[in-house]
Length: 282
Image (cartoon, rainbow, N blue to C red; front, side, top):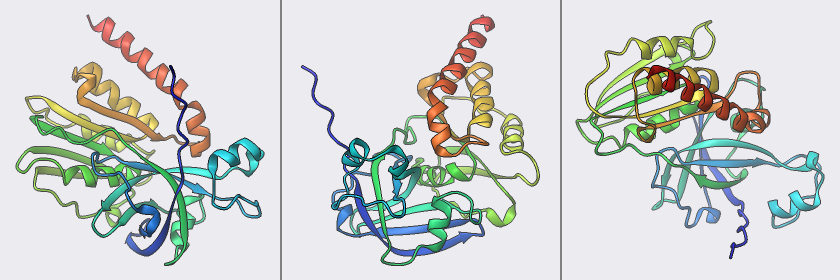
């Protein structure tokens, strides 16, 4: 007998403080009773779905997303944006989320830039599926600003002394962060400059002198460069799928709503092309 789907309840958290990490990266630290029992910690790519309520809409109190989606017109639904959990401290009850901010562009960035202690944030989650494999011979972590929080959290979990090659693309040197790790990590900051997102990053990864042994790879960020690196890893380097966490977090020219509505079709096409390339390889 099929069990009915359990509704995903929205949690409410309160802004405790914010921190400007780089010119375009702001950390928002959340707390409050709504975080009691928050089940994060197993994975290093935990994420939450943040719900940005629309002005002037008489949402039910307490907020009930299932009720809103059932009874309100779609244009009144909250805008949903996905963000990685940078850290969760169960003892202090503090949840940190890093936001990329580019002026007034988007929804989440401007909110984070203006956030003040006491502001309320609604979200669902966490989701997640990746953490560094302790048995891997070496680790490969690749991404852009959107993947930086997960890369930073993952580096903290790579076993001490284990080799790790890290490639992070950012706009320029002022966007670099200090990444803490006990791993034998070689961290390469790739500066985008005026190039298209991911071009310089793909070039840098291709120049890596490929280590021997089993790799556990994490590659996330803009969908087009992720596609290129997936071909490199799966087709050219023959990395087994189970040793690879790879996905497009976003796509140039699309907001999250547009990307999520087409992501399934995009992924199916990428997988088909990959299968054909592997088959033709013989």
